[in-house]
Image (cartoon, rainbow, N blue to C red; front, side, top):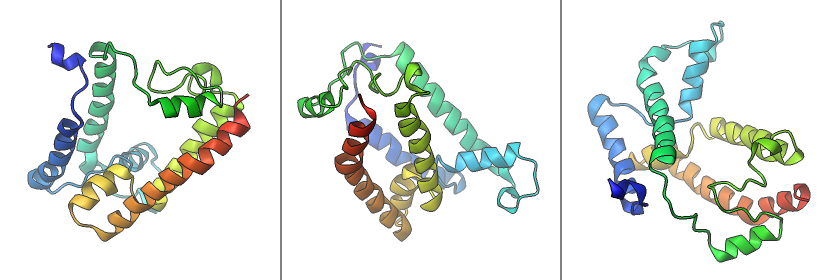
Length: 189
């Protein structure tokens, strides 16, 4: 059981994720995408006469189980199979973030930005509320998220997924090098 406490090679996760696509197609011709779960959840919980939510959401119950399993698996992995070694962060990244007062690299997310104390601060508003809105808007605008487009869409040779994935990458690079430094300079003390 000791191997469960050590990081696995990236190719193992890639292989498992890659095999998800043909498994879903072979088993029941199902599409993969996490962002659609929110739409199905709204269709289940909002008993209004809204055309957008007027469909058979029960056909997607398997996706709810998949998302719950993903969350539960992450929790179990973090609590019971946590890597005892400290986080490895590139020195260049540490230096860059230290310029903005971010020095805690003990967890996946820096506590100077993502902590309970910061939720109702300007940083919390910018990173959680505005960032969450932009992710949700972008997901709807692109008609899917990175898992739907970059994993399933590319595997099934969908042209819109290739365009969306290229835009995801360009947007991520642009935000990392231009938007994030501006935001950190503005909201960090």
